[in-house]
Length: 213
Image 1: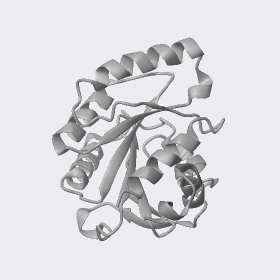
Image 2: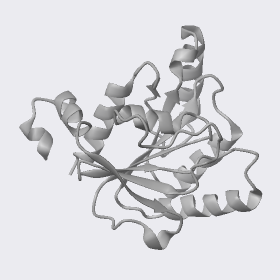
Image 3: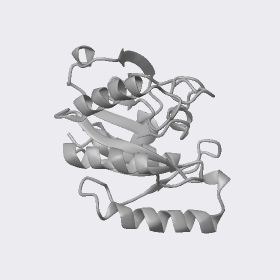
Image 4: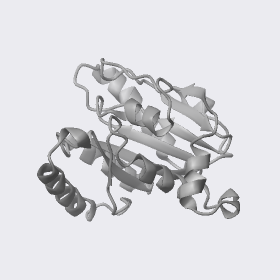
């Protein structure tokens, strides 16, 4: 493990996320998935939750993951290779009403097939907009992750747009909800792409996961 040669996980995370990151594949069918040889960390969430902005901020890039003002633009599993050590997977956004039911069905099947038995997948970070909180569509995705026995963790986005009282209430509510989901990691992560809030902790969390082997 490379982290053994560095002082601590903080330094390892800083080193890791300073490495070259490249887009390697846009997957719209299972046959073209990258070979399962490296760890994978996936990001999921409702359309317009700030997923692309968070990925760009996490990687210290301006436009690696495409940020769109039109929700629902991510229509495939986008794989980004960081430091030739692991993949970040940007999953299609869900819950946007303007997308056709047929397209939603295709997306849902793609996501379900990806989650089934994908051994390199270490964790799915499920993004929730701090302003709006938990929605029915989020519950459906969590049930799917529970069913697939895929470890997942809630990341609250856009924290800078909320009051401290609102955030405290939100975290308390979600913590109780997570107790009912067996595959959910109990700790929440609070982030703001605009203010870089919580990004160091998220990087360290990912560094732990990809360095386990």
